[in-house]
Image (cartoon, rainbow, N blue to C red):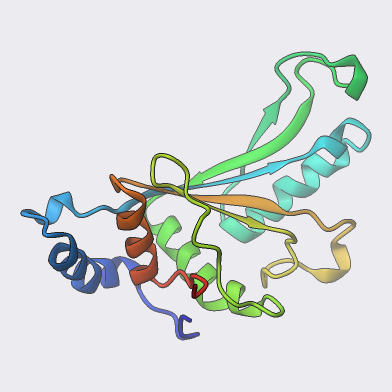
Length: 185
């Protein structure tokens, strides 16, 4: 498990993660070492068809948690069975890069994940074919920026760590060295 003490993750990546990955995977050059290029956060809002205020609530929550406003995603076509019309707002997404990305990862690893009740680590198998890791959170209340009294409904979202790793093993080791607490097998 990770410690609860905040760490500068970019500095940790440069000073400890790059040399360890270089030694383990025998990279000839430090530029070959995989890195996290961005973090994509996504929340689908199927309820927005009946409750249009859900979109604005999500925008406000994302702004508080991530420090930037999300893009509101809209439906591409109408589906009568779901009472969905074309161009209706049905979700929010945002992309974190650079310093905001490292700041959010630090908060996630050190403050948020240890706050989850009965937390025993994250699953090892949530990698896609391109060695990106997706983490689903079931509620927004675990973030310290969310005011419990103002929450009308519990809503979760997905967080995807996009890496430059060529294999899942490289990506898993990168995230583990950065402090993402994986479940022990």
